[in-house]
Image (cartoon, rainbow, N blue to C red; front, side, top):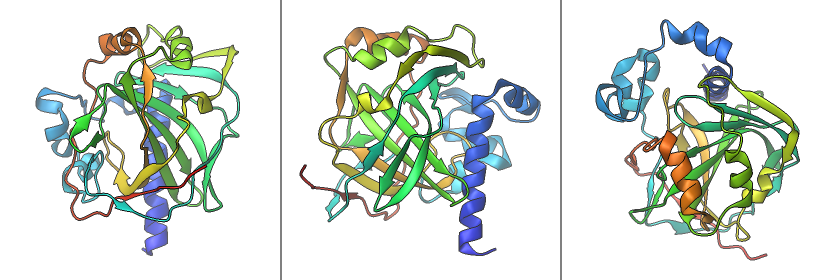
Length: 262
């Protein structure tokens, strides 16, 4: 298999994993043979790679996420162009996090290459660390172009501080039932409202941070955190006290950082 074909196959596997997590009927169809995984104990992160052959990359992968970002290299990197549009709310409590399924038509572009936004979700505490420091939460905006074999995550770190208006809106609609996406077509919002003013970033090659831990994903971690109130953070933590994979070995990967100005 060519490198490009292998990469496209990997991205299709990533897309399939995300599709299953987002659609209860598909999730139910996989329930009989997909192993249960969690964030602690015998089916926690240290054991993901042993739970199923489909999860082997969680143990054998060399470009795993998240990372503790240290010794990054300044580089001449282009800004991320965020072309996020309004979306009606479709929200899912999938048993591991709160996930928002985004309407088609929004994307990021870097050096003229566009990637559609398909969903975003949250982790508590942050999965990414900066020089050993973790934050209160982390937001992952997931972008996939299956046809082109490309995927990227834009990660935004969240620290305790002022109330976050968009987060406050979303938290009002958290479903009580696990595994059932709920649509609120009259609740329209724009994920761009999460973005900090300074959008410089760290960039590296990585993976999904949940099983099957598929690699081939470009990670963009914004250097400037956003804020959420202690009450907003606590609301998520009551559902998911710890849904963060531990940091993974860097294995010689280069971590670059942008330094552009507006």
